[in-house]
Image (cartoon, rainbow, N blue to C red; front, side):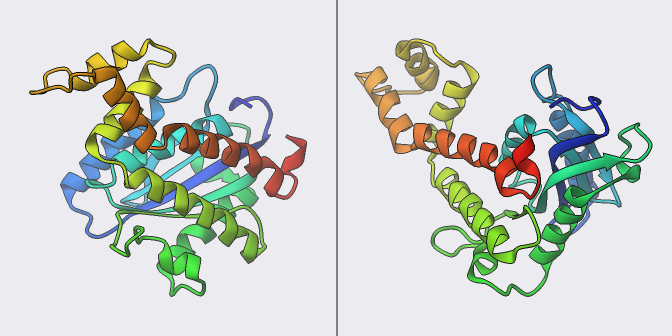
Length: 247
């Protein structure tokens, strides 16, 4: 559903705060990220509220389901320079004035994102919340994400746990695995030899069978599994969220 098509829309709200200091170079990088996120919108996906930096170092936007994954992916890529707490909320948003302004929107989706962000900063009361911000071997991460789909804590923890496991699968990827996945996304349905050529372009000592090597990196990255898990997870949000099954 595109922004502007009526005042009641099912969507995902994202509220993010920087972890640590508010240095000017961090804020400049955050402004650049806001521009990059805004550029993701297109004919097939749009923002109800475009990305904006507010309250110093808070990033805020409301997106339709099709846009939230590429937006979060870009935020995840920026995590080393911009470590973040990220609260996500799903539901219906209500624009009281019809102009989709960030300071004049309300509804469960906004409140859920704010609650999810607040919960990240409080003492955890569940194993899922304790593990957010830790990788598979317990090291602190720079991308701490919490998702609220309703009032039921067990459901919120279930979907956040699923999201956490997906992130761990992505963060386990090595440099060449990440590059192979990026090529597959950027140029879908191309011959394998093209991917292999791009993967090893400019590198010394490429493998004798570059196509086989590319396939191996893609398989070790669990590309097909992760992409399907992400797609079905986002589709399911409309049904998990109260009232979302009518979308």
